[in-house]
Image (cartoon, rainbow, N blue to C red):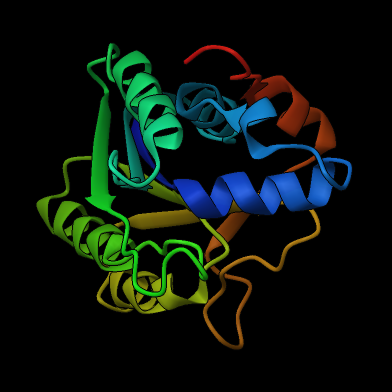
Length: 194
């Protein structure tokens, strides 16, 4: 039987961690923006069980157009392009500008949104497997809850060179490690596209 898989992307974590590991110092982040569909298809295609990508869930902050008009335009253009595929569900939350412009804006509420959706969808048993791509340890309680309560099959993904999210004292959940070649295959240059 073919398993229906939902892939969850902590987008800022996926983007910046990959950029930090695989790109030369000084490379602008807009020159290597990961495509959520390509990442999800890559992960699902590598599963040992027959699988189909049923959903891609992307979580990211959205800049304030009054403070950062160009990044906001890029964020909106990416959202428009990505959501053409009905399998993609995009959750964006306004960035927090406390300390701006001396401090960069911060995402707020993204981890909570991911954790709530992971547990909610695990409870609904809408998918045969959930795969979370993130290296953020704040998401471990959601993984531990899903595994501990046997709510469903959970896997994780991270870039090679990062420690995978694992339940303490175990090698669970299974991790899909993506490497430099994978990074190059799934990133797009957004220079001049906005």
